[in-house]
Amino acid sequence: MYGTKRYRHITALIELANQQADATPLIEFMLSALLDALSDAMVTDQVGDQVIDQVAASIRVFGLDYIRIILYNNI
Image 1 (cartoon, rainbow, N blue to C red):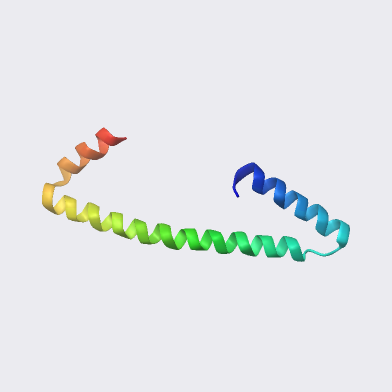
Image 2: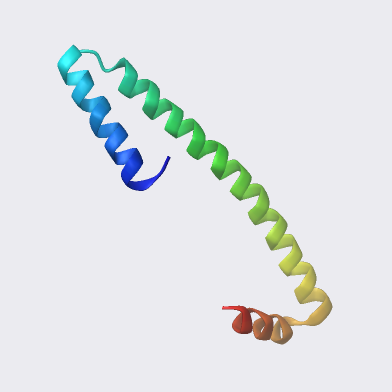
């Protein structure tokens, strides 16, 4: 759930919390969103490490000029 949909959900939860004088649903949602973000960051970090290793290996094998040409042509 991203962007406008998430914003509307948060806004509805804030309104509900104000009406019921209970922020539990909002806090649960925010903790869930935080857990999702942390999980995504862990996966992204693992992928990032793999990419860094692959780029470093490519530079060793092909040389930096070759890598620059590949990156420039794929942008």
